[in-house]
Image (cartoon, rainbow, N blue to C red; front, top):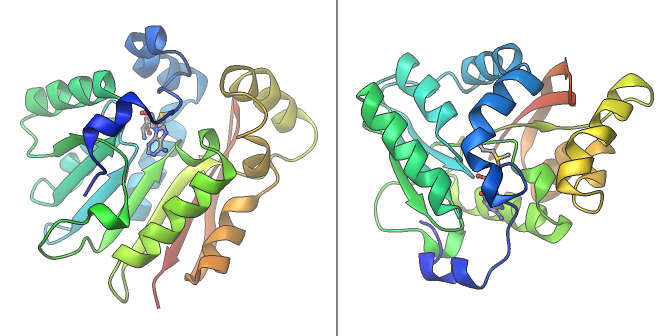
Length: 225
Ligand SMILES: C[S@@+](CC[C@H](N)C(=O)[O-])C[C@H]1O[C@@H](n2cnc3c(N)ncnc32)[C@H](O)[C@@H]1O
């Protein structure tokens, strides 16, 4: 499923907390600053994992969503893909500790890297799209569309439209200070649901909009017609 792991050496990406040295602090920072319990449970409930599901998590990071999916549906087939090998190591350790059968691979999610076998029926991603360039946002969403079978679902939790005022200010002094303005601005202007619709997804909706100390996190879903 992921592109060649070796391509990580040449292909740029933003690490989980913007700088590799900060990865050990990722889980604590996300827990406190994004008030994680407020949005990750909502996201997991929206994904509604079933034992029969085959789920791909794009930019799975340190595996926090994997653990939540495992708690709800331990038999679901979960594959997390992330270009950051340190994050993947942490995710594998956390999953092993929890007795989860979640699998993680180092690399970039891509439709071209699809391995033989049944396609996933759900593709999920949290806090990834805001920190990738616009072209990469478009490519990822296009590849999700290509891989999903008819009726397959996409679920995204990420910084979405930031209403001018407190949320936009918090977003600017936290997320944009760390991840930069260039990649994050289109998210703050609400581009994600537009890209989902332009790509061909139907029933695109913003299921939830959750204010946090770092700005508003939105939960989006869509379906492949
Ligand atoms: C802020 S972290 C989110 C991690 C995890 N999904 C979560 O909810 O905690 C963003 C992750 O996206 C990964 N990433 C960066 N660029 C990416 C890309 N182009 N495709 C997929 N993942 C990417 C990073 O390595 C990092 O682990």
